[in-house]
Length: 321
Image (cartoon, rainbow, N blue to C red; front, top):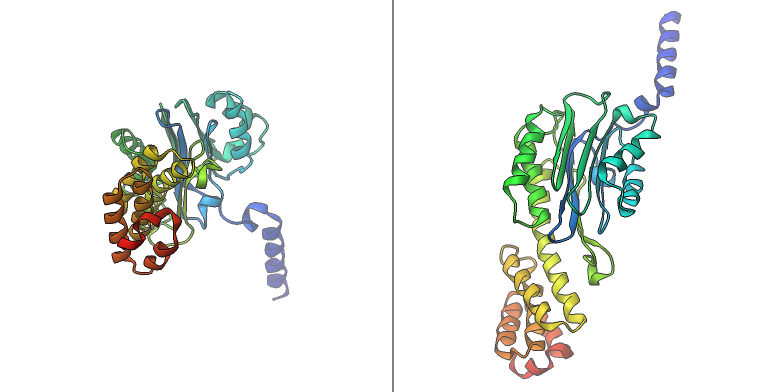
């Protein structure tokens, strides 16, 4: 009995000295880093059987590019990679710089894309099978602990076939195709999607146009799709309201109409989007259209009536609402 207890204690001591055994599991994921040179957007979409994968893998910066760092992820690759890209270093060279000084590079997986669409992907020989990636103009897809190579080929195909759609939709399509092809061999848990664009953030103050995460869910893909749909409404809405605040009224109306069209599929956002459409229509001198939008907004959310009565942006409509 004494020998058995000694063995148990020894094994326990050995297990606590192994940093890989003691730490959380690596973010074995499948991801896409992508760029749309026509719009200046860059971003990353990622999924994994790993809690809050969006806090580890995706990095993006307008004017610089996007980086997905995974497997036994070196999160320093994110900001350092973006700094290198921002200096004009090509993705392949930036990848070489990042890996050169990293003793753990054989267990890393990285995808890098520049705003011009140049790309590179790396899968270290020590990554858990199946592991690999593919890259081309505007994208780098990669995955580890996958059901097989079909995951990344399906992602690549979905991204290429969705050309012409917003970058967020294309990355989401790639992610869902990867899941349908087998996804993470261990199952599902979290997913994330981000898009950066110059002045893309709220009010135009930052570049974070879209940033949605599902940290823990039995259906992270369904929830990510729902959130991305809302985020696309919000992105158009933010463009419209930012232009309105800067008195670029015709441009504001273009974006707000796009936001309203998208919001028809998202009734939880529609009343407030319509309300701001009324404000922007009025700023463009379209009183009839403004009144129609305001009435529809209030019909959907009667609580907006009180706001409209004191809102100087709708002053010309007060007696008609």
